Image 1: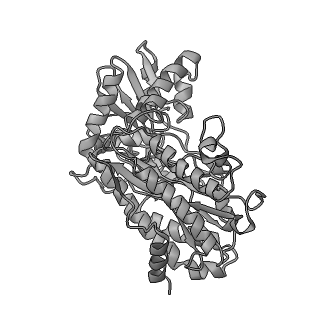
Image 2: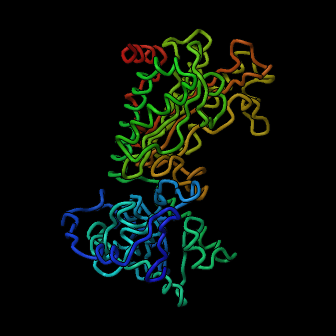
Image 3: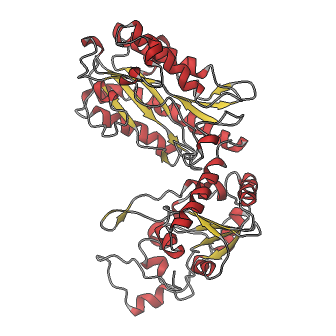
Length: 481
């Protein structure tokens, strides 16, 4: 964080002569941001920061955006700020690399950032630095512009080390920014406890979404719905391609990049037995019209909120009798789970309700060596051979949102109005499972929807995508040539 950072010029760049350096130093027009430009959701951020400060009075809190990560040699991965930083600042762009939000012991928030280079001040960064230079990666705000955008007091990132010279109690989100971790001397045992409590508080701050967040999540769901439509329209071409899964992944990703920041997580495009692999992201298989396609995908908005929706579709456009039987059992489980959602209900209720339906269905098919009731006991769980994972999670800036929250506020907590979550039971009937009849082997089905808890129940945010098998067939027929 020196005054003149080492320029990332790259080994293959041409040298800059003194004459060129002098020529580059002047005659640049001013390009200020519009005076009324603010981060989206500007009015909602002060209350979030105030709540966080109130939870740790008299302490200094540091929330980093994160650093670039190398993908290969001199190429970095596309940068996305840490979700807690975005939640407190509204800053979501790739230019946020290395920035840190600091909440001072008196509650004042200060944004430490790398400001735009002063082109007339002798710095060559703007055209020579491949990682941060404006000519290479685009414009950054200066200190005054960042203050205008966010309503925060701003300071130069080079001043950040001064915060660690005193004895003010300090908490940081460790593990996000290795530069900040090193500066702070993390992780020590005592610091790890403090920082863990801080990370939990940041997660819990996001458990209940405000009105603007719910709008952003609905926007993400709406974009995702159109992405699913794009995938169905792409099926004829994908069925002809030797990597049909990837063809469909590309169709969805095109929508995600056109409408938002990209996908909120790696898209799962799983055909046939690949659908029995819970996190199948290789997406390198062909498509067989006699099989099913499990598509698990979400568009991330420019404000970094993501949907998370799964549909299981017949590649022929029509379910076979065996496929329909499995699908209807999963749909019944999901419907039972959704019916439990309301303020005051246990977070785990929807999973329990769905798994009871699954266990009873498996027992009725004769697949369990014990009764459904026995299989559901805590010391058994035999039904889980066919449905290994949980049935849902919180949703927001992260696809598995609020993951650092304490169990008593999340997994063992109760639902509140404004929480947004998924309900996603599934059956994964492995192709080599000899407990299954041949016609069921290799069928994987998950149905996942996004819901917001309301005052008297829950609203299905993703209701534009059909769930009923007959409705899915009709929907696909309207999209296919």
